[in-house]
Length: 326
Image (tube, rainbow, N blue to C red; front, side, top):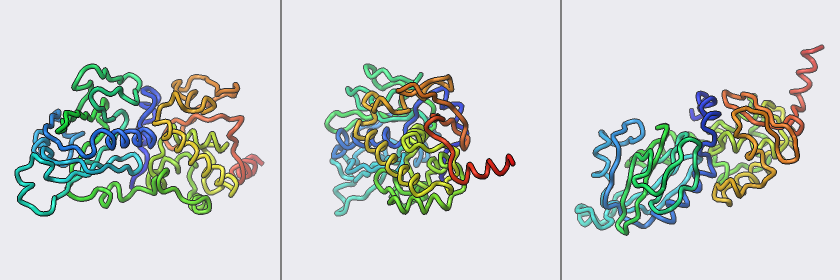
């Protein structure tokens, strides 16, 4: 079962922003623009069994990739999948087969992972793990790939929660990706479908949004922003949301994800009214634009930022509380 990682709350408070759907979508666009259509001619990597998977030994990575051409890239939730075809021009075996064989690279960024292209400024900077783009390989690099036109791509990850995995089977059809729920941006449920799905969930709405088997791609800051924009308390039981609240949630989800991805995950371009700009304080007192107080609670093992004056518990959640007090 794919759910959120309950062990990351304290670490997230310390390190701040982690890669979620908008950040991974930005990486997908980077791969599409700079790498797709190019053939791998050289691979260098560190000896890290935790990050580099799909090969018996990390040192074998180069022989599995040289001569292969990147033909496509897809995103599912917080995962990136690169499709490769053999016979990009440097593989001796490519001419021996009439039909090019395929393999895939699945990348997950964990807490601080990303892809970098030499000569391009990093798009996302994680607190305490900034990368100096003037040096190459970059700080915290795990895999560096050189392409036939001279383009150099690096997978970096400071905390080593990320994954770089090679497979001969389409990862979209295999675990863990096949267990993911619909992509929150690309495959969102209709408003009615979302409401009906929420009625089947007893947990807090914030925890439900973070459950990757429910909808994939929503992480902590995106979940908080969606709930703030829809005026829903993060602890509100999902099955107590009214049709109007589900409609507001559906609208906010689309707004937040479309806005963030259209801005290429550049937070300086996010609306100034967003909770995003006020949540990175390590639980210290802060306010959103307009002066309303932000508070922090733990929901489903994760730190949640919310604005109490805007996000109030409603419906059966309130009636149960009143009943318990009487």
